[in-house]
Length: 172
Image 1 (tube, rainbow, N blue to C red):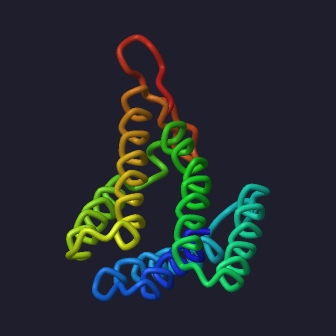
Image 2: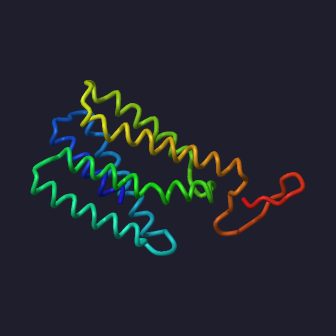
Image 3: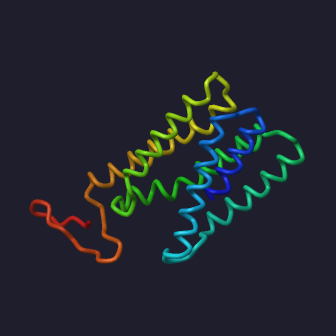
């Protein structure tokens, strides 16, 4: 989902006149694509959930509407909204199984988003929308991971090992 949405966001930014700041969106789409390929090769479980399928259909519909309306701003708004919807399962996963996510990756992504905001160079809400949204998303993922770890709800995905914390068991 994030590969497609990143490509839509980058395309709409380029369409609206972005230059260097569009590189961030392209890099996000490429990076998400690499992660997708690795997940297909090494992942477990179902490739697409119902939510994933629904969001993908909405993305396709958004592209059609973009074509009909010739409005890159609409495509950008739609991709940000759908990305936020697609981010909810990841935020929940960070809360429930925080050690299955690399918090360093989220910190680096937040830093890249902040730098992308700076790369826009002028106060253009259309060009700033995607990197500012990503700052919020990555901050939420970091917060969810930290809250999940603080709550002691981290569970090792393969082993289910339980560690002792004080006098109570805490899943890791």
